[in-house]
Length: 281
Image 1 (cartoon, rainbow, N blue to C red):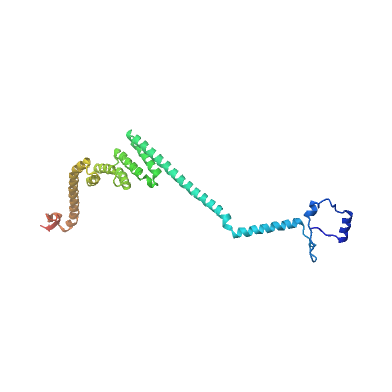
Image 2 (cartoon, one colour; image 1 turned 45 degrees about the vertical axis):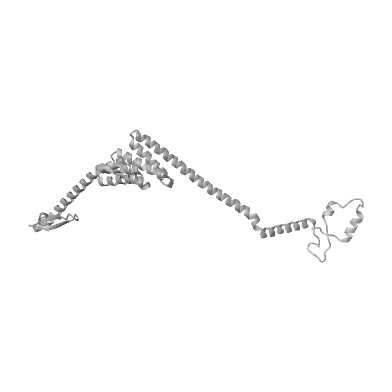
């Protein structure tokens, strides 16, 4: 603040240093502008130019604040859109990463399958089994890998068939058919394994399914003609074994009463195929 001295002092100084008519006011005097106000203020009723500039800046800042409050969307929306764009880009990046990882896994699985095929051709069945298993582990979580997995399960079944592990062959072929119910090659290999285990009924069932899928398959038709008599023979044999066991059990019980199953005669009804028992001494 500029302190004002007595008027007399100012007049004296003005007389001693009269202003030049030819010279214009100095920049300092023009910058320091005073005005008379009524009353006795703490600031002596004067305001410097620097104070007025601060006041003007405060007014400008207040005006800016009011504008920001009235129009908040104009400044915030670009930032929000930019943030949303970044999120979308990050989501796309994640999706792309997942896609690239899946493609890489599928490529590695196919490579492992090809290596397994080469090992199989060279008679290295155990090593081929490991390669097919690796391929399955790489893509087991991908829905797009159904075809590849069914092939690998079948190939494992063929390896196990070569190793005379027929029960395991049936399991692998069944897994392949769960993924692809119309996989006729898996049905053929499973029928072979069933035949090796003398599961003639099951083998005939698989061969009939092959004929349903491909009525022109002569090998399946020949297999059915060959295996059906064996299946019927096995059924009769199993029936006789069951009757023998029942007789032994019956004799162990009836013997306590002085009787045996020979006291009972079974008569077959030709119309229904059922049996009736009659007691005889």
